[in-house]
Image 1 (tube, helix red, strand yellow):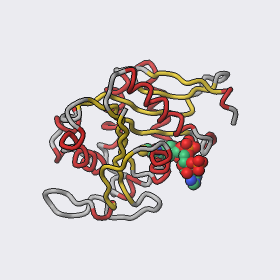
Image 2 (tube, rainbow, N blue to C red):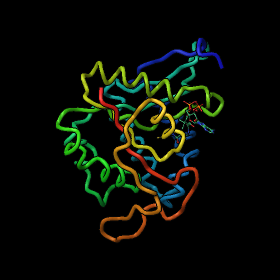
Image 3 (cartoon, rainbow, N blue to C red):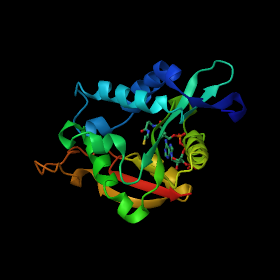
Length: 214
Ligand SMILES: CC(C)(COP(=O)(O)OP(=O)(O)OC[C@H]1O[C@@H](n2cnc3c(N)ncnc32)[C@H](O)[C@@H]1OP(=O)(O)O)[C@@H](O)C(=O)NCCC(=O)NCCS
């Protein structure tokens, strides 16, 4: 795969249909997370994904790579600016309405301001690369380009939460600091005490929150 053939693009609401397509086909289906959380058949999964991605695209901070000739979107990265002491979605949504991965994100993010202070961060999520473009460094490049977006937006940090071992490698390679970590099997629901990820699906065994100070 030649990088010359690809162009970096900022994505907005007009790109929603393509972004939904890449996420539904290559993020949800390729990710063992819904299986680990036994939520593959949860009817809330797709509407929630569509709602949150629509909100993010409105900000015009999300990035992608397009093939210069075919214009096909081949990689995506969802970005939003958040307050360290108040991540809008996770603060505003009651815990019982969140799906397992969001409950985990809510738990990881709730006290980060105690360590990181009261500024802002760029929240980088749902990095997805089409299988035929995998392992060419696109996820790494999208993370690096997101750092530029974070600097433009005068954010204090970039923050990423991932259950994908490949993304953990990317974060480590780029010098991110590990702030939170849990084995998925050990992460329990606050009220029931039961594991929210009862099935272990390697290599997605751990969730990690990484941050980089800018
Ligand atoms: C995770 C994902 C985004 C990685 O994209 P990518 O463009 O292939 O990643 P990169 O090429 O930047 O690879 C980064 C590192 O991940 C690791 N890695 C990626 N794919 C790998 C594979 N198939 N086998 C082993 N290691 C792999 C490598 O360590 C690699 O670095 P290296 O090539 O220098 O050794 C892609 O696999 C994907 O879209 N998966 C499905 C959606 C998903 O789960 N996204 C994560 C959301 S948090």
